[in-house]
Length: 363
Image (tube, rainbow, N blue to C red; front, side):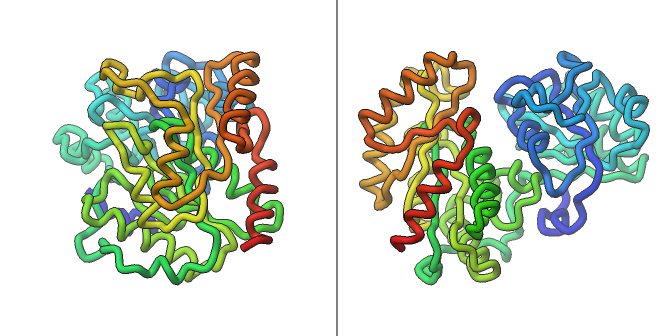
C-alpha cells in the first residue's frame, strides 16, 4: 500500500471513475463529489454500464459537465482519445469490498496503463492478481483508506483553544446525507463573498477532491480521532488564518453504526453546527433492517446543545422528494425549530453565507 502523505504529493492529473452501475445511487457519493468538483483530478469519464451514453453531471445534479458515461474502459479510450492516468473506485460497497463482478473493469484499467485509486476498506493491493497486473504494466494501486503511520498520528492536547476563528461543523442525522457537499458549497460561497474560509475533510472523497487539511475518519484508530480533529483544525488555522473553518461531519450523533458526531463538537470545540437532515428517510442508511428509526431532527438539535454547541441552521437533503414534500417539510421544521431551513440543491447556500457573516460581526 502507498503512504497517504506520499500519495498526497504524487496524485493528480487525468482520471476516470469506476462506479459499477451505481452512479445514480447514494452508494456512488465519491463519484458524485469528484464529478461536481476536484482540484486533484481532471475527470475524463465515468465507467458505468447502466447509464452509458449520458453526461455524468446531468446524472448527478442535472448540470451538464461534458463528462461522458461509458460502458467500458475501451469505450472511454475510443471516445476521449487520451488515456487517463488514474482510474478511481468511485463507489462504496456493502462490507467495503470490491465485488468480483468489478474485477474485469479494474483489470482492464490496469492493462491499459492506469494506476488505481481505491477508497474502499479492502486494500486492492492485497489482491494478488490485481497487484501482479499493476507490476506488469508499471502502474500503482493507491489504497487511500488506511491509517497514517503511527508517528504521524496525534493525541488531543488542547491546542484547539488557540484557534481564533469561527469553527462550524456540518453534521447530519444520518450518514450519506450530503454533509460534504454542503460543506464544500458553503466554503466556496463564503470565499466568493469575501469571507476567507477553509474546509476540513474527514472522508476519502474530500481528500480525493484535493482538500488540503483533514484526515480520513474511518481509517483512523479511535484513540487518535480527537487529536486528528484538533490537529487538522489547528494546522489549517495556523497556516491559512481563515475567518471560518468548516468541518465535514461523519455519520451522525445517533446512528448506532456511526455515532461519531459528538467527537467533532467536543474535540473541535465547535462554535456552531449546520445540521443536515433528510425529512422522509425513516431508517438509518445500510441499517434498514435494524429495529430503529431516525429520530426527529429536533432530537439532534437538543443533543448538540447538551454537547456544548448551538445549531445555527438546518439544511435538507431533498433526494427523491417531491416539490410539495420539500415545502411542507421545510415549513414544519422551520416552525418547530425556529431556525433557518435551507435546501442547498434548490436554494443555494447564500442564506447560510449571510447567517455566518452576521455571526462574524458579533464574534
